[in-house]
Image (cartoon, rainbow, N blue to C red; front, side, top):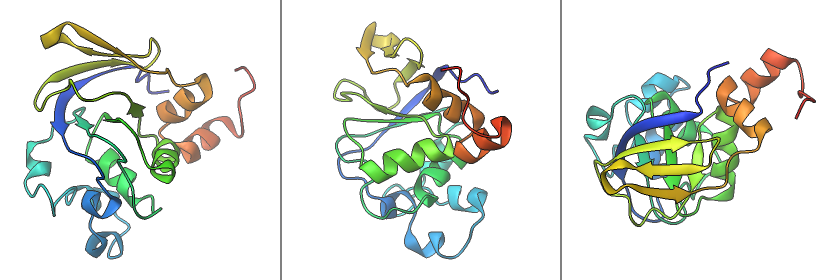
Length: 171
């Protein structure tokens, strides 16, 4: 199991109402099933050079209603395959939230108002906190339940089921 319980990365900040077509344009999500190819076009229409600026483990930080729009899994998959460590937002569209968990992408609901572009974050998924070292500030989050954390660590729901052959009952 990939023990991704403490995540570190740099912030790439977005605003409110980032819809799934902003995340990955429809011209790509209908043209290919190759997740690496989709990742190369992440946020292309609103932040053309985003993929050149992001490093593995970095974070997307947004405001309200992140992931609104279509219910397709290509949006969280493109984010995951671009190497994003987690998405933090004040609120998420419900279907995007569920799809992100299903594909193994950590998504964290937190007040993002004090988080700035380029800032380093340390996220502890067990303790339930986001630490901003530059401000010596800790933001509380609700930790993932053990089952959800196991799904994320396995790489998503399908990989979890392959690994365990069903639901673990030790939780």
